[in-house]
Amino acid sequence: MLNNWNIQFWEYDFQSAKWLWLLLLIPIIWLLLFRAEKRKIGELKFSGSSISQKTLKSNWIFNVRIALITCNTIIFGLFVLALAKPYHWNSPEAIEQKYKNGIDIILAMDVSVSMLAMDFEPNRLEASKRVAMEFIAGRKGDRIGLVAYAGEAYTACPATLDYSILRKQIEEIGPQNIEGGTAIGTGLGTAVTRLRNDSLPSKVIILLTDGSNNSGDIDPITAAELARAKNIRVYTIGVGSNGEAPTPVITPFGVRYENMPVEIDEITLMKIAEIANGKYFRATDEKNLKAIYREIEKLEKRRILDQHYKLEPPATPMAFLNLALVLLFLSWTSNRYFFKKDV
Image (tube, rainbow, N blue to C red; front, top):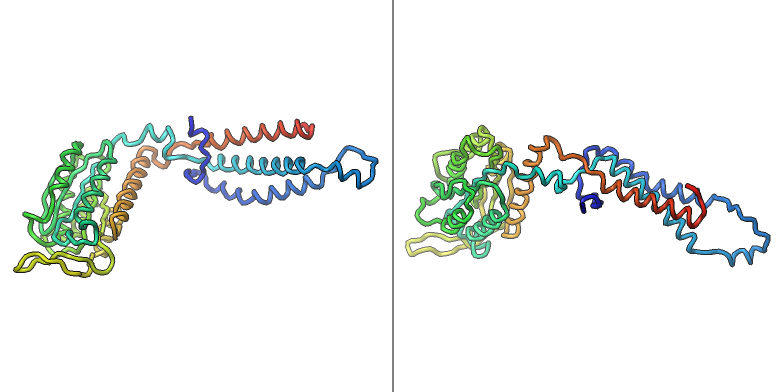
């Protein structure tokens, strides 16, 4: 019911947006109505002097006329917005269709030693885990799995609706007990194999790394082409601040931290996303990383809705028409009451 009065037009998309050009006429229409009002000749004859005539002047009448002109101009604007066929992704019509099928998602997360760099709090890996679990908490009806990779890759959790198991696996992954290096192609290829042919129609891989491909048997571009062949979208995220970051370095005397340049192969990550119909993002801090996951969620939500509606949900102009009719009634009654004018 509340959606029938939601006139926050910036929240809407429009099927016939060309009608919105008529909104440019609003100031012209207001000016024409104002000039027409000023040119009106009164019908009451007055035989007194001009001085006594001025004593009968009333500012509130002028203000009412200005308000009615503005009201009529707003009515015109509301009818234009209705003509443009507005639709809202959160309308009741859209909500009925949302998430009927869900998505299959694989999180492919880099767990190499460099992910322990401390430009995030407490480090890149732990910050990435936190954000991933927040993302999972907001999903409903989506099967989500986890692939961890460094110099090699393994499936930490197959795609599942049991998010408690998935969260537990995310907590446990790390650079321990896995070959060193960064095998982006192997990580992506392993994620692709986890999305079987019987997966849901929407299949997504979110690949996160802080480096460049320096090991593994699969080239990242080859893995991206395999994802495209299986109709899997791949979103890539480069994690790391700009400049240098305290990074763990393994020495004969143990691990120590040194300021090392942040080197992310953004060109390859962009190419992967382009090939697999996804998008590349760069996260320079945890807040930025959260925003990226929200953006991915928004993109996927839009794709899901597009699948149901083909192009867009049905138009919902009632909010604009309802308010236009209310203002039209107020304008008519005001003219009848204040000016005894039959409109």
